[in-house]
Length: 288
Image 1 (spheres, rainbow, N blue to C red):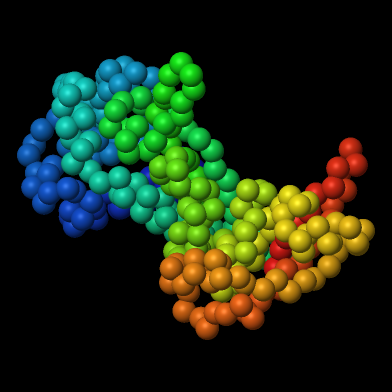
Image 2 (cartoon, one colour):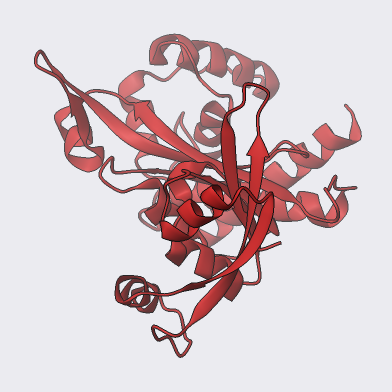
């Protein structure tokens, strides 16, 4: 076992033991107290094994491995597993991901670009189990023939170190930018965030300045009048002052920004023109 795998195994075991002792991630304090087949460590291990096949097959294969390790002969079914899974809060896995990331960056030789940890952020629609409950919880896509349950999946990924720094599965109606603005209120490991053009927006740009976090984002050449002016100028690079408007001010106040905001408040935005090999022009916005 190499050092990275040993570190990961140790941290998973320690985190699991602390969660079991605190019971903070159990729906009830009495959950996982009986000596049944699907104990907390077993449920945790089965989920962490990244099941891809049918639940019946994954449960059989997973329990075969666990039985071999524990020198026992026990097999539980789908119904018992699902009941056990409901005892565990989903926030357990989100907090575990953050814990592993923080521990990794504190102990490892981290790859950076000019001193920055790079976090690329993007989202997509994700097909999920098509049930009435999940349609109500996450939304659905529809056409003239049918409706299919879908959610909005968001990922923040360290492109140099291969670590997931943020993840979220939410309702389809909640935009990608809205999700990221919520992340801005959380501690951030990455100090340079990279976005595609759907994320360009004054409120998100202001939040990065407010949190002292750098960003680079693509934007449409007709994103706003300032960008249009820059495109017409033919310049390769420019620094502009962008003032807040009433809509952005209200949004920032609702997000908890504690600053004296007005229509005279502005941020500095650096615009960069990139000409691709096919002649297409891309515009980047940044506070670097």
